[in-house]
Amino acid sequence: MNKCSVCGHERNDRDMKCPECGSFYSKIAEIIAEQEAREEMQTFRGRCKKILSSDDVKQEVLSELKLMWAGLTKKGVFALFVIFVFVFALVVSVL
Ligand SMILES: [Zn+2]
Image (cartoon, rainbow, N blue to C red):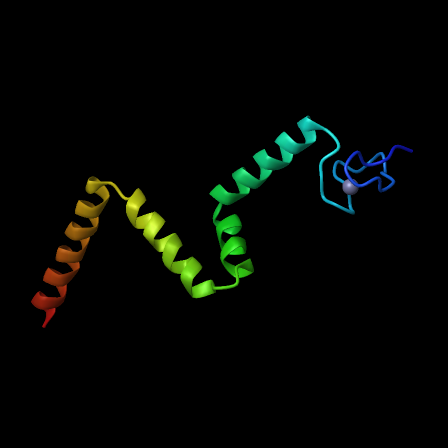
């Protein structure tokens, strides 16, 4: 049984990370965990989790929306505009 190099807590061979101080036992384990966290950030579920786990949910939703808006290309905005106009024209013609 080894010990954590940071805090001296006894380590379990199956663990990648110290349960006491949270430091990783190897650089590879750290890189893998970082990669997983980054991948989860890119999924919708990961984003929802991040929003729900934050202290200020409203602020987090706003910043996510801002990110989405910034990610929209001019083409995307134009497509939305066309859809909006189309729906508007449809509503007007029905009335
Ligand atoms: Zn530790």
